[in-house]
Image 1 (cartoon, one colour):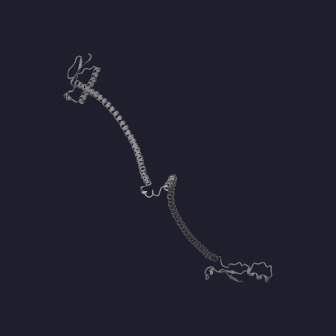
Image 2: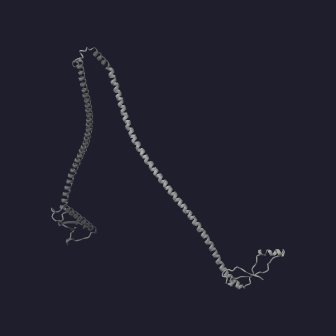
Image 3: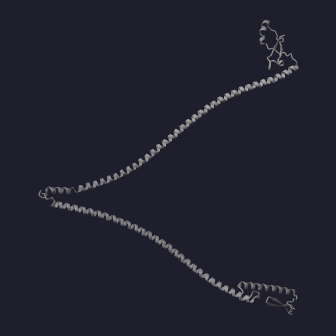
Length: 374
């Protein structure tokens, strides 16, 4: 009987880990010839047969299971290491891709910054050009306005010159007849007459005309100056009239305010006089009343005099009032006592003396006799 050895797990020198399997007869149902059947032995699965004892198999199985688990864990760890390495490689690839993207983004950002800087520079240049153009436009507009004003002034001057030209042309055409007349006179004058031109009557007439013309111009100039002085005097007169009217209004206003103040002061003075008179009348009445009261107090003081207050002439008004008050209180007290004595109908003695028809009481310096019924 042939035996085959399975591959050992663990150390090769350990006999416990060696499994001896006996090559039993194949459990095959023969349906073919021997030749054909022998050729297919390589495809037949063999079932191992254990020849060791149960305890040895259990002991070997426990060790084999632990080592198998360790190997499985080692295989799993290797797989995890390979996966981790693969993931690390993928992460590295992704990191490199992200770095490339980051570099691209930084490059694009730098390009955008450059474009923004160029655009800002372009905007600043356009703004500067706009300011220059605006300044140039303003200068040209001012020059255009000045030229337009000069043109308008020149046009007005041209109109004035044209008007004067027309006026002078009219004068020339108006005095043309005189020129023709003088030319005809010169033609008909004899030759001897023109020899002494300085003494000729024509020259005297011309000189007289020049003198009169100069005098006329002087008079016209004086007239213009006098008219200007007259207009200036009239304007000054109007200004003085306006100032006079304004000053007059201000004076009238101040006068009305002063008149109002004077009226108020007069009314206040009258009111104060009336108040003073009333106070004087009241003061006089008050003085009379006070005098009457003092006289009444003096009279009462003489009637209610108490010796312990001193001399009557030296007693003050307030002390005298206190003395009168004390005297009246004493009288009231005595009346109460008399009333009690009358009601009780009892006999009493005062200072060891008896009264047949009454009782005698002494209160300070006054003596009152009260008669009681028998």
